[in-house]
Length: 336
Image (cartoon, rainbow, N blue to C red; front, side, top):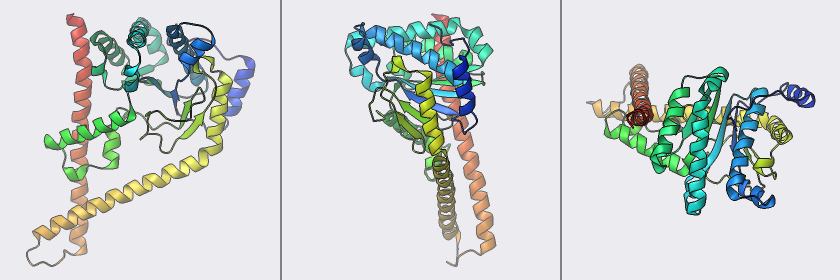
């Protein structure tokens, strides 16, 4: 099945969508697409057919999101923990991924028409090289599209992502791009795989499981979490509407928590900057007397400007390193 499923909503769905859109709508929805294997057992199908039906449901769900004006979707496609499954199932999932990314590349004109940008989040080095190359080509081909965004978490766990972000900051310090004092919660967020996306407004997990399974733990601290009992291949437009209603009912409290968190982050950064400046001025002082208020303000302004410039240079270097990884894989594809 195509990644982009064409078609309009029926009349009742259109009316319901318009009613929903009168309220606050999530701009970014994340899905834990759980229940493919249970669906296969329920329908007496091969396990692989359950996964195929799950992909087909993703294409349909993206169509619903498009009609609901939800521009960004993130899906948990393959956890690092899934490598512990049987070799037969893992090989089957890798083959399915290859088929779907080949299909995506065949549909590049349709993706361009709809402005779909594909991002793949995870450690691609864990995947077979031919799959890495297909993924890289899909990412590079669609990177300039900006109408809607699909983030596919593949060979991913949140703890691995956070650990990798810490490694990236350590690399920045080793390279002299940033100082250890520049490390902050905000900078760590910028080093995550998902740094190009706003945090999800709504996270949905299907199949009745009530846990996050190491998915977007950092990014969903102020998101609406909805757990639904339906198996993913049986997911419906009405299930999605139900989850959006839950988001709307909690929108004010979520927004308030996010605003408060941003204020706390800004205050913590200011206090850290002041502490660095105070330590610097104390080292510079010849007579042990504290600097006057004007001198402290000027030093603080200089420190903040220098820190922000360092951080931006580091983030540009990090972006270049990550882009080069995808471009190098595409070059290998051409050479092969």
